[in-house]
Amino acid sequence: NKTFSVLYIAGTAVPLALTMIVVMYFHIRISPVYPELHRGNLYELKTVKFYYGKWNSSSGACSLPLIREWFYPLKSVEAVTAVYYYNWSPFYIQLPDGVSELAVKCQSTDPDYFKVFDFQFIDGIPFSEADFRNRRRCAVIAASTARRLFGTEKAAGRHFTMDYQDYTVTGVVRDASTLTPLSFGQVYQPYTCLSDYERLAQQTDRPAGPFTTCFRVKDNEQGRLMLAEIEELVRKYNLSHAPKDERIELGGPMPAWKRNLVSGNNDVDVKSLALFWGGLILLFLFVPAINLSGMIANRMENRQSEMGICKAFGASRMYLLRQVIRENLLFTLAGGMLGLIVSWSVLTLGNRWVFRMFDPYYIYQMDGADVVFMPSMLFSPRIFVSAFLFCAVLNLASALIPAWKSLRRPIVESLICKK
Image (cartoon, rainbow, N blue to C red; front, side, top):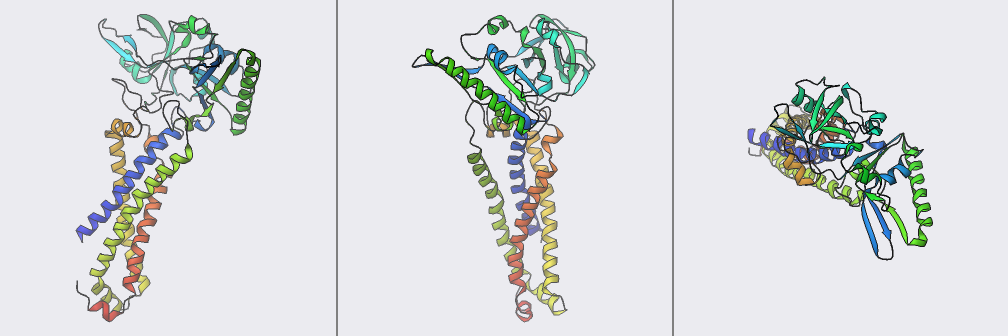
């Protein structure tokens, strides 16, 4: 029955595709993906609230003096990096033709940025601590930027002009994705090269500033020690500044996977998110399964005479039930593969639309910056197998109940049923 087969396969493919789109979206946001391969050991702090006087307050990310006095000296971390957060406007690279310009996303950071994140260097090395301290105009660039500027990825030691300043390429890294906005960049420069660096370095009156701080720890135990160490710093600061009615509150550090669940500086309610999206996924899977159960029941009614003839020639109920199960597994496998292809196609071809639908502020928007999908983003064997097995169990349960009820009929009653 071609109509039944098409409806069954589509009824399996569509809910599995919807489920895979939702699951892969969260997989990209919270699972280890390049260059954030250690998200389980990565923490992010980008919310600082400073209260002064009785009614006055200010908030933002971290100031440079705060990072230098508190976070760089931390003992219970593997590495700490500061990333210029208020870098919404693109930088412009002047192309060799002397007329055209290339807008790029430039991350202004420090040398430990390449210890916190797991960048793969194609050529060269990161800029050094000496480059950073001496405010040398140098940069690590992405492979796609190197190809655009020099026609090759082997560009270490070459020069380019950005915002009419001469820069030296120290290294070339494999491109990060715009889906990892914390680590995505086309150019990575020392933040000491910022035009207003002197002002930022001397901003001692407010602990809130324009830098996100990222911490990398070895394991969960070291993460707990780091949080305790930072809490102690906050406690001492608030005690010493109590006579001035000054105190500080930090929004974290928070695990990077948890921070990625929502945009901006909003609080993260993991339980509510899990209940909402988990319920939505179950709805995607259960409603089609109920519809398939009704279709299978009707199909079994139409096959009663066939089943009656098989039983008359000695076929047992278990033999016929196994035949029905095999048919359903074949349809489920076909529907599962089709659903996987559909989900990949939707994410690849309509990626900006899909991710804007989930969170309009998550994906980094920039003309000329394509959404790069890594293989680990689009396919996780564990996720696909789990979703497919869950879908298969639901489909089999939908088939077993009507099939078993139908096969329990006496042979004579089955034989006189009309097709």
